[in-house]
Structure formats: C-alpha cells, structure tokens
Image (tube, rainbow, N blue to C red; front, side, top):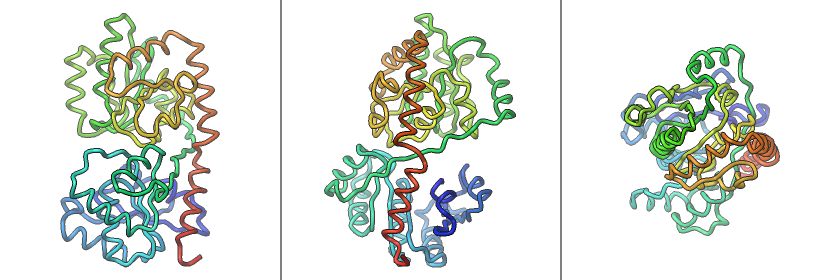
Length: 349
C-alpha cells in the first residue's frame, strides 16, 4: 500500500483496484486520500461479469502503468490489462508458488512475455520464478520489500496489555501473519508444547486471521495450550503487538520477503524465522536473528529456548536487527526503486 499512499503526489497518482471485497488496508488507503475501486460482489474474478468489469475499470481509468500483485491479480489483472490496452504492465511476485497447476504456469509464461516488467521481492523468488517461467533470471528485477517503522499508540498498548494480562511474567512469543497453512502456525504450536514439557513456560499471541483459525484453536486445545495461546485476530497497528513481544517467530513453510519480519526487526524484537524464500537474504543466523528449517517444531523450540535463556543474545539480535532494516530494507529505498521503474515505463515521461 505504501506505493499508493507515499509516492510523490505531484508526480504519481494511484488508484487501488480490489478484485474482491475491500481488505483491511482499503480503509487506510482511503483515509490517506487514495481512491479504491472494487470489481464487485461477484463470486471471484473468474466470473465473466467480474472480469468484464475489471476490463472496463482499466479502460475508464486509463492508467499509464497497471501494476498487479499476488497470484490472482497477476493472472487475471494482466489479462484484463492486455485486453484493455494498458500502455505498460508490471507484475510483482511475492511468494514461491511451487504447486501451481500446469495450466496456470502455461498462461503465466504467455503473460510474462507480454509484460513490460517482472518484479520479484527477493533473489530466491526471482530464481524460482525464472525457472517456472522458463526465463533468464536477468529478465526479472528484484525490488526488496521495505518498511517504515510505525509507532504504537498508548491507547492501543493499554488495550492490548489488558488482553494479555494472563501472561504474567512468562516470555511472550508472537506471530503476526495471516492464519493460513503456508504460515506454519501449527509447527509453532507443537514447539510451544515441547517447550512446556521441558519446563520452559511461554505464552504466544497469534495476531492475524484466516481460514486456519478454527483448526489451530482446536489444535491448541488438544495440545493443552488453550490457556497459553491468544488468537488476537487482526490488530492494527502491528507495532503495538511488536512493542510487547519478547520474541517474534515466523514459522512459515512458504515465503517471499515477509513485511512482518522486517517490522519486527525494526521494532527491536529478537526474531526466529525459517529458511524459506527471501528470509535468509535478511537474516544471518546468530548475527541478527535465528534461522531454523521449515516444518521443524524441535528446531523452533530450541531456538526459542536459546533466546529465552540469554539476555545477551536477545540484546544482540535487537541491535543488529534494527541496523539490518535501516541499512537495506527501508520504505524509502523501496519507493525509490518503484518510482524509477514507473518513470522508465510511463509513456508520458
């Protein structure tokens, strides 16, 4: 969303198009003065009327550049942009999607050769995408995600502390991620159960929502963790969650370059993350964070225990994590790269 709200307004004007209902960020964008339009209440953009409306929206807006993000938009959005005659089309890939159906890969290969720019959020995403699309990696540019550290509000912190009153003096472990299978929450639940069995009493807060919520809640109860895990739901700003955490854990099995990881590091929270996607491009194990293999509860438990038991290690990771984000993963750097790309592609410049 930062590209829509924080590129120089005198030079760039953005319109956000939602393929389905507006998400959590739509209201924030509108409050920042960005126009948000939606395809409509159809059952997904695959519906012929929804796709036709998307084509009409692009024709009506007459953008210099259509920039699509994530799997559905990269597929249907680019098809609609081609039909609408958009002057320039850009697609950003955020994840490593190894399980795409062959028919989708075939269409995306066709689209890739008709896009004006392909962007990956990390070197690992670029390598995978180049292989999947049968392209030379040089045909895909990398623009790393970047963040602007947010500040918690006193009112929000007070409300969150009240929700977390049951924690007591135990270490607070946190995840800020959608409750989807690819984020690997179940492996963290098993790690927490293993830590409890070792006598390391931790409490966890899962900030986010999604289709896995009911299953994860049932799993927590089965593991005897019902009173040790708080399913917080979506909480904004996430800075209020980071402000109260002792350790941030990202147990993902699939990633690109997660914003929540960067936000946690910028907030000075020691992090444990898995060696997936672009995460190792940010984290050097034992230097500015701890890395573990994906889908490995024992490794997660070991890493969390090592942080819980070492104030010196936690302090080192806080300081070096902040420095890492400040040196290479700022919103300023991200927006500068994006603005340069738009200037390169816009026919009006």
